[in-house]
Image 1 (cartoon, rainbow, N blue to C red):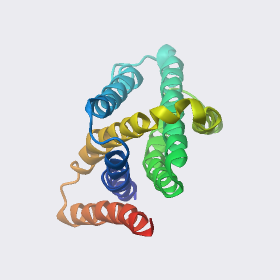
Image 2 (image 1 turned 180 degrees about the horizontal axis):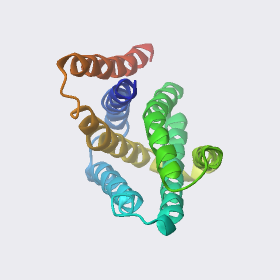
Image 3 (image 1 turned 30 degrees about the vertical axis):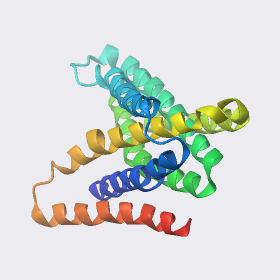
Image 4 (image 1 turned 135 degrees about the vertical axis):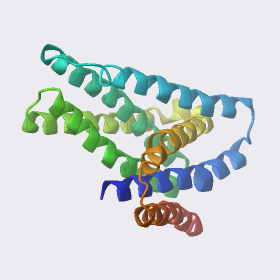
Amino acid sequence: MMFVLISFAAGTLLGDTFLHIFPELAEEIGFELPVGLSILGAMLLFYLLENVIHWHHYHHISDEDKHPVGTLNLVGDGFHNLIDGMIIGAAYLVDLRLGIATTMAVAFHEIPQEIGDFAILIHSGFSKTRALVLNFISALVAVIGVLLVIWFGQVVEGLLPLLLAFTAGGFIYIATVDLIPELHKEVRIGKSALQLVFLIAGIALMAFFTLLE
């Protein structure tokens, strides 16, 4: 079931980027240098953020160090969710349909990620109840990101194209670096074919939203 979610999430992220965000950018300001730098900057930021979150996780963890690792993961995930919220808020400021499509793309990639974060917290020594509550609180940080962008909408209005470019960079990174490599681990032809079907389904869903515009 997890590989289905991952496949669909990768499709929605790529579909939203190439079918919604890039055309919006081309219409607004074109692909100038600041846009390219924003895309690359997002990819570098996500790379650094993931390294900070997972560095301790991939090293030997003693029982005494388990809780700090879980806490570090929560902080990193909270910051990631804040960025996701700002991305969603910026998309709604541009266009309602773009906002809906971006919300769906973020939600679909967050489902497998939050399951993974829950597993890390359990491994770090937290009880299931506490891990669930902390994971939920971390997810709520995204709402703060949305509200920040909406409240300061007039201030960031001139930066919206760059925020969209940042969104595109983040989505491309998550889809190509985090999600699709997970799909490559499946070697059985039947499941690989099913992965492709759901990947295309995610793209098709974003294409459907494009046709509604």
